[in-house]
Image (cartoon, rainbow, N blue to C red):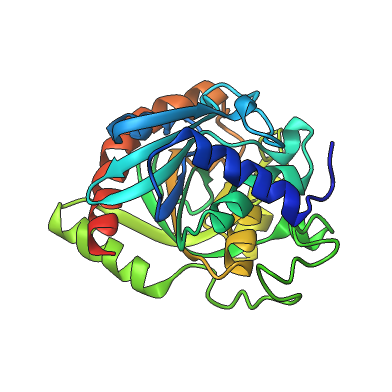
Length: 278
């Protein structure tokens, strides 16, 4: 496990991508559990497995294929991460967020993050799409902030502002796209836990009390790194299971993957519209 990466190491990965593709991506997209099918919509793709890039960690979780997909989605050249790695897999925060660092060195200015999330808000149901309006870095408050260590001054400041982690203009474009295509969307706050165990009912009641609407095990570290490098971020959660506030239901990873199949068409439409508006 590697705790920190130098700028030279990040650039080695960026150079390896440049050597393997004809594309110059403008935006990055990270796909969460069960959402990898969206990558199949990329036109004339160049495909690079994670394990063929220097310093890249490899996905070990079902529903995360571990590939970079480069090509056009809508009218924008994109880099899609078909899957991600997580802290609970045994990787460091530096390894979890390394792909975002590489995107920054490749010149990308926008990042769209997606995830499968459990409902905390009792009004949310599986299959809903939630526009992330803010986040709670619970895992980072406990010390696991991805910016821990020496600051990379060439990318961003020592103390980046997080008051607008998710770009307000991109959120408004998403709302307009949802209305145009009659896609009902929720809006709410996403909270990140370390995982891999799912939450107890008491956990969920606590998270609801502090203002969270959906919970997952990813995304927040990536968004912090993206904002450190001044990338504009849009976040979308696919609600995979209903809030288990009373302990009467069980949550499984199979349920999460199944919900992803329902959510992908809606996410594809929204993301295409956002990209076309950039």
